[in-house]
Structure formats: C-alpha cells, structure tokens
Length: 268
Ligand SMILES: [Zn+2]
Image 1: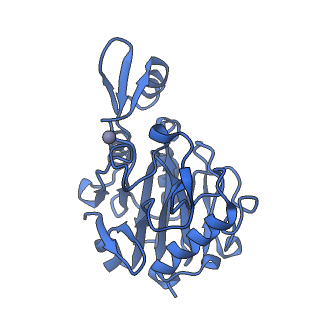
Image 2: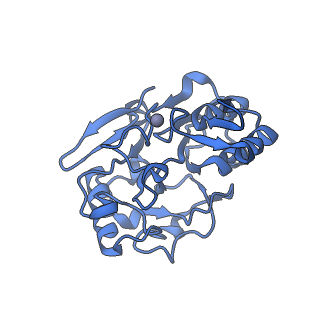
C-alpha cells in the first residue's frame, strides 16, 4: 500500500490509491501552485502562521476543489503539539476552515465516523492517517517530536478501540516529514524520547542525536497491534525535498502543507 503522486488539474498531491479503493480519500499537499507569496510561497494552507488569511483561504479552496470537496464539509483543529484526540461530528462541520478562531481547540488528533473531511497542517512534523473499515472510522494526527514521544498513536487507537474497532483491522499511514537525515537534536530532546518511548533515537557524535519520527511512529503503530502490511510510508523528507515541501527547520518562517482524509461519501 504505497503513497503515489496524483496529478490533478491545477496541482499535484500524494495519495494512497488502495485506501481510495476502500472508499477513503487521503491527500498530502505540496508547497506549489497556490497564491501565497514570499516565505509562504505558494500553497500555504495554515492560518496559524503569519501569512495573509485571504490567501490561505484561497489556497484551501484550490486544494479542496482539486479533491472535489467543499470547505463546509471539513474540519481543522488548533494544533498544540499535544496528544489530545477528539471525536468529530456533523455539528463541527466547517470549524477551523475559514478562520483559526473557530478551530477545534487544543487538539492534535481527530477521528470521525461521519462523512467529514479532516485537515491538519505540517512542515516537518509527521502526519499520521488512520482507517478502520470495521467501524468505518477515519483519523488524522499531527506528531512532532513531542506528540511522538508522548505517543499520540496510542490516543488515536484508544478512540478506535472504544468505538469497537480492533488494531488488527486498522490501516495506518505516515506522510512526508523531516527524515532522520536532517533531524539532529540535543541530549535534552533525545532523553525525552529515550525516557518515554525508547524508539527512534540515533546517536551521532558526543551529545548529539538524530530523531527518526517515521521509525518511532511506525514502532508505536506496530506496538498497538497494527499489521506492518497495513502501514503505508511516504518515505519523503520535508527538509531534503525543498522544491516540494515547506520545512520549518530549514526555513523558520514558512508555510504548511495539509494532510487530509475523508470517506468517499464526503466527496461531492
Ligand atoms: Zn532529509
């Protein structure tokens, strides 16, 4: 189950065709073919960076139009590098889509069984996608080093299990994020990883480490009981791929790509 590039009418995005066959549309955007300028050039999809809000809204409409979706059918949250995961319902439709103030407050993961598009924003952090066909539940989470070390994967899986889904029947995917090739951290961050999840820390030289967000989250997914054949890895580094992606670590002030998931019934 591989991520593949889909070339649409106005822009390209990554998607997992085999999830699409199961009735779930996934997408991860690039930084290209939008209307934002300068540091945010050009398809910045997040309000929480200091880009022009009208341009962000226009970019969201461009991106969702490519997917055949209305902005009113989607939900976005206020991401705070935590592990709070919320269950999203029809009454949340449109929250966080035209401004930041209406976003679901303080949560880095969303799940839903409704026909709602879930959208989250990334520039190096790991996008985690979930689908459980037994209970027809989808999920999307934002996992930087903090969310990974605090195991947001287990919080999403708790939501799936409490709704009656099993790990064995759950599909998961990790989209583009900063790779271990480019993610050097100090002893302090490495120690948090070592103390909490014991995974994804690679020592380099004295006092320096590299973090592997993909490996860490993959191990957490497998540890929950998800089968490795049901996990799709994009294996693309946001820092290395400067033509395709924003990277917070590379650029500091920059835009955000979107991770997106919806059931096909949500597509108009
Ligand atoms: Zn890299």
